[in-house]
Amino acid sequence: MLIDKHEADNILKRVPGLVIKMSPELAAIDTVLDDDELFCMIRDDLGRRYPKTMTAGRKSTPVEVILRMLTIKHLYDLSYEQTELQVADSLVLRQFCRVYFQSPPDHSTLCRWANQIRPNTLEAFNQRVMNLAIDSKLTRGRKLRMDGTAVETTIHHPTDSRQLADCVRVLGRTLTRAKSLLAARSELRKETFRNRHRSARRAARKIARLSRRRREQLKPHYQRLTQVTRATIRQAEQVLAEIEDQAVEQGQRLVETLQTFIPRARQVLDQTVRRVFAGEKVPAAEKLVSIFEPHTDIIRRGKPNKETEFGHMVWLGEVEGGFIAQYRVLEGNPADESQWQPMLEYHVQQFGQPPRQASADRGVHSRDNEAFAAKLGVKRVILPKPGRKSESRRQHEQQRWFRRGRRFHAGVEGRISVIKRKYGLDRCRNHGQVGFECWVGWGVIANNLTAMGRGLSP
Image (tube, rainbow, N blue to C red; front, side, top):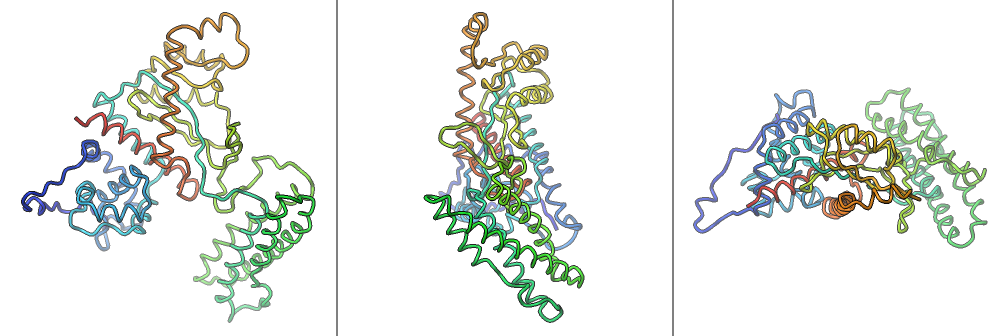
């Protein structure tokens, strides 16, 4: 049964000379998290874990503890294991997380509860934090600066050979598990359950070694690797049909694994044949760069130190006070200029009025975007024009207010750097599309809670 909180334990007040004192910022964040609306958002999501989570069963970890421990995790960019250890070891964090003298939840328990929180809930959570910041007069949304950044997923650098080896490895170990389940009741030959992982791994390693020097010698090894992959896929399809026919309850997880990874293995095999043997350039939209994180996009932003990134573009809108008022996880690699109008519309909905000043980089500039902002009521539109400029345009951008706006906009790069280094948005450690969106949401919330703590602390 889901419970709200532990009973407060003030035993430490009886210890002479012992003072538990939070830092001013953490004490301010503690006050913000006391908001009932924030608490109810998280409780509603946790209550959906099982049909009777809210009413039956033994007492769970309190909602208040889960919310605050997840906040600590993302404030300090900790793993679940580190969060458990830090809270258990610190009297200050025990007080902040409202654990008191109870045992903090195990890291695996905390992870399972965290997986129940949905991306939409975190968006609403961030909106509520922004409303509290507005009520506290920490920001008024008068200035909006927006920019995008790439957040990578947790995958190895995608090559055809490594992905084919991954397919054979996953399907091969699933066949091994299915063998013990079907051994006594199946008519399949022993060869059907053969795990070809070692053959695929050897071929992939040879390709990796030769790719540094002799690219012309790669095709025979790719031929071997694709043959091994095709054979494994055929075996997996036979075993899948056998498990489904027998309707073995213990085999449901194996069925789900095979149904998930067989189509992905086929796609990787197809794109390898097209690229290596047919010499075709496979479009980025048709490529699968990870069988474990299939939602990953291929992002090319022209950065000199990192030409290609693998993850998702995230578009951020920052207002004065260091608050990220809105964020969007984008699909693919859309043009920057397409993000200007939705961000301004959301800002008006969020603050009830347009910003006095709105700015973005050169890639966002267009006549339509400038006209849209002016029509919406934005007095100062800071969109520098790329390429050759007319004399009138050059004079427009040389005005004092425009140059000051450009200097203010440069600060968004620093904000992006902070959330990447401090709050883990350089690389997502969650799995799946939903996990990715939650990771970004928690990173933005951690940034905004820190800004609130800084603004409210004396």
